[in-house]
Image (cartoon, rainbow, N blue to C red):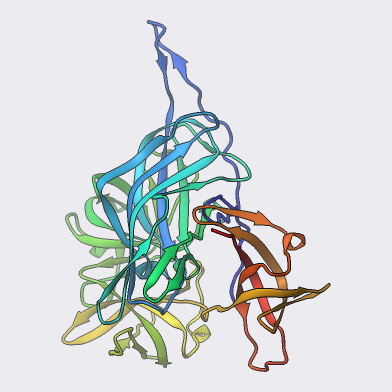
Length: 429
C-alpha cells in the first residue's frame, strides 16, 4: 500500500507537507552602540525522488536556493556558479542532505526559489538527452508561511517527482514542468532515512554518541539500544568498536527539537567501512540471501544477517516478511571475499500507473479520458500544471476538453475504472 502524507502545494512545484509552524523565536536586539543584531537560525535542505524506471539517471544542476519574504528581495542561502549535480534516481529510497546553511535570518517566509540551469536524462546506453528548462528558476508559493527560528534547525525535504516532471514534446524533445513534494519536517514526520557520511572526530562512550565531521560541519550522532552497527566486513559490531578517524555512514533522522549550534542526528544504523548502495528489482529473498537484478540486468546475491535493518521508502521500519517479489529495493552492501553483505534494505511500493489525454466527459462520480473510465481513489488531489508553476485546484475546476494527466492504479480488468490519486490539468503554453 502506498502511504499518504499531508502536504503543502507550492507554485511551480507540488509542495505537499504535514506543516507544523515553528513558534516565534528570538528577535533582533540592540547593542550598546544602538546597532541592530539580527538573530539567525539554520536551514537544512534534503533532496529525494520518487521512483522511475524510464532512465538510468536524471541529473539536475542546481545553482541556487533562496528564501523570500513577502514584499522583500530573495535571501540567497546557497549558491554555486558551476552548480551542484543531483542524480534524482539515486535518491528514490532515501533523502540526501544537499546543504546545511547556518546564519539564516530569523523571520517568516512565504516563498522558496530554486535556480536550475540544466536537466539531463541518461539512457541505459549512457546517451544523454537535455531537457528544456523554460525559466531557469522555480518559485515555490505556499498557502501559508513558515518560520526560521533563532538558533534552531528548520528542515525542508524536497521530493522531486521526476517521472511526473519530465514531459515528452516530440521525439527526443523533453520539457520540464517541475513537480516536487516538499515536507517541512517535524518531530511527528521526520521524513525519509538520511545517509550522512563523514569522519568520527570524537567519541562519548558514556552516552553512546560521537561527533561526525561532514562537509566542514560537526554533527552529534546519537545512538540507543535499538541502533545497529555494522563493521567493514559486513559483520555486526558494537558501539565500542568505533574509533576516532573512522570513516562511517550514519543512517537515520535529524533531531528537530534542539539548537543548531551542534545539529543532532539520531542513528538507526551506523556503517563502518566502504559500503555502497545497490538498487534493483527484488527477485527472491529467504532467511539468509536476497537476490535482485539492477538496471543493467546484473544479478546480485546478497547475504543477510539477523541484524540487517529493513525500512520502507518513507523511512518507516518494516519486517523482512513484508518484502514482495518485484519490488524496487536499495541495499547498503559491503564486499568481503567476493561476497556481498547487507546492512540495510529499503523497499519501495510498486510503480504508480498513469493515464493521460483529453478529458471527454465529467459525471458525478467518474471521468472519461480518451475513452477510459476514471474515478477518484479514497483521496484525490487536483492541480493546474504550468511551464514553471503549479496551482492546487478542485474537481469543480475540471472542464471537458482539458488535457489531463492522472496517476493511480489501473485494474487488470478493463471494465474497472482507473483509480486516480492525483490529476493534473496541463495548462496551455
